[in-house]
Length: 204
Image 1: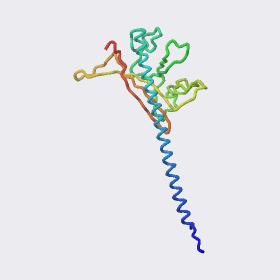
Image 2: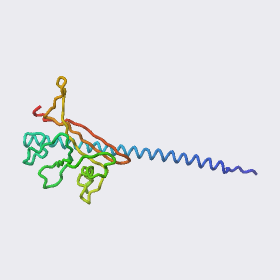
Image 3: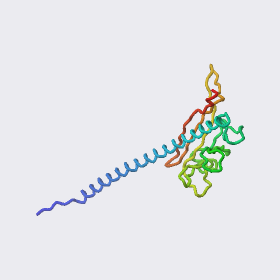
């Protein structure tokens, strides 16, 4: 009786086809995971950026309630001349300390400001880097050894708001253009920012 069997060439062909199928499935899974990871990081960045804008709005509203101004950095202090300045960069975050006289902490970035992939390890970028504390909250306090470092950085900046009157631009002194920016380096360098106008709406 003649028995049919696979030849070595046929076995090698099937092994090749099966290997290609495995590689194709792996490529699809790997690509899906990368896309999901990228989307997750963009969602985190969007939430962090929106949180910074909301903190600036909360400062504006607290100012109205306490001192009838809108741009003082800490309305609970006695220094009402310490206001947000144009062209400056600031770190802004919730202050959860029980001893804090105001629940939002604002610190200007006084070091030479840098950003880009080749500056990630510079002292300037580290000054506005983000860490995660023991309660899984994002914080700029990366000097605490108990806080876990992330690859995210965030800050806000304040610019003038202008409009054209006839042909000449004119500044609106009762408003800021706030830029909330998030930077992260996961699989490559990424940036995300949103802009919002924070106005002295009671006087406009």
